[in-house]
Image (cartoon, rainbow, N blue to C red; front, side, top):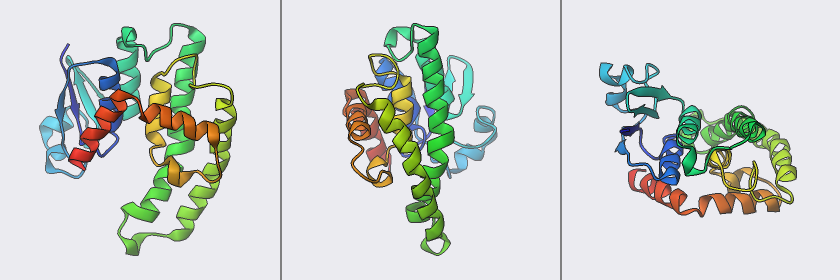
Length: 206
């Protein structure tokens, strides 16, 4: 089954790229920029009508939304070890992935936009501070969950760890205080060989 991943690695495309590396999947990477003209062309809009990255063509199955893509790749390649074998485990994969999308990413993006991404004249310091303040309560939830365990769901690294670790890529700046369990978990995730290969693509294309 041929897999094509669209989007530069210095974007949310890092998530499906990391998943593909974890699963050992052969894939074609089309490193189109999220602001590039290619994403506005009819050919790409037929794949992702939002005109954003990432998107994939997985043997004819077209899919956008980075976290949906990683869940799809993990579920359809269970031998790769990122999915769960139990209903309880699958529920956990969805829970932590949706938690990353709803509780962490909006605040992390608000902070990033108003500290680094937007032009200086458009940044609003109070919005960055407010986002960082709210994130601490969410990170406290994660810290308590990780106490006494290495991974989010079950006894091994899963797509839930991949998704949340990628959303929390700037954990060093986002987390106040020690957060020993969370920081150790994040380091374990990003130290994985597949993560290193994916992040090497990110550095090359940044």
